[in-house]
Image (cartoon, rainbow, N blue to C red; front, side, top):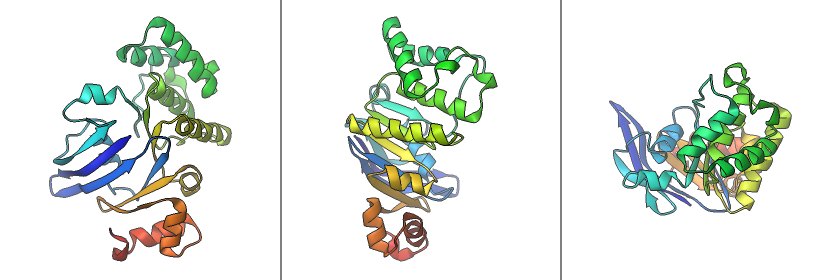
Length: 243
């Protein structure tokens, strides 16, 4: 379970995040929606300890990320917006390197490499260097790296960016399986159809704040709209939508 409590972050004169609070529950997919610059990525960076908040806190399974970062981050798998892959390493070497940092044994690394290659349909990529990969192939490696240690909390920032149709369908199935297995999945995307189909709860950001939360059906009912895109536009464009 991920809990965000009154997080705030300022960069100079810009208040990037102000008083953001929400919960992402185990066994559910929680979606983050918002226009560019709304504060989603800054919030995720504070959750992953890459950015120190000015106020508030982030908890992973009840562990404060700022006070106990190592213990908290052992419970988190993170796919960042910037994939951050090493071009001269193979896909397998990425998994072994990051799995080793998490304390996995050689036998566990071999097993997880096989499982993730099967799950993400990347068997042919395992022993190739990342330097020649397409954007979609890089995304697969980054997702496998995030899942290698079997975290119970998974953050996916634009997980399907660059994937083809079949790979996107496969990734949606992976996300559903993670939630069905009891994982907490926090999913950020700009694709409305994807968010509507996958997410149990949605947190909408605008102007550095959370402006609405609820299931897709609740957000549509609240705004009187018959699709999520129209509901989203109405919420972020109206002061009446602020909570």
